[in-house]
Length: 143
Image (cartoon, rainbow, N blue to C red; front, top):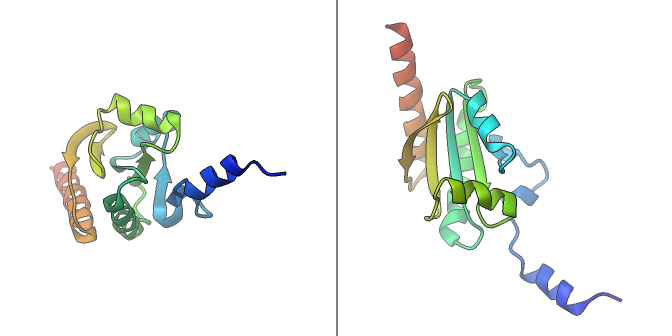
């Protein structure tokens, strides 16, 4: 016989886009305490979305972030990662250590180092920002 409290908790628990088959859906890699540093170290340009299932703005941000990530799917030096700060304790640790208190929040890393904290409202802003950073880096490398 099923425990009614457990069944109720399952029904009330919000779902995550991590639950979608293929956790890298849309080119976004879901990160935790064990994978975060390794991911940003591998990417020349890494944009990380810190989100929580408990805020409706985050649901919109997830979709916009995923669409933008698909734009850069063929870029080998660009990575899009996401951390759900309230889903699992090991993901929450990342948010705690990086002092993430606002959701959604974005952090841009260049060559493995935090370069900028950001806020975006639309897909185009995310895409334009990343395109500008890639072009800026290419210009510096050509000098």
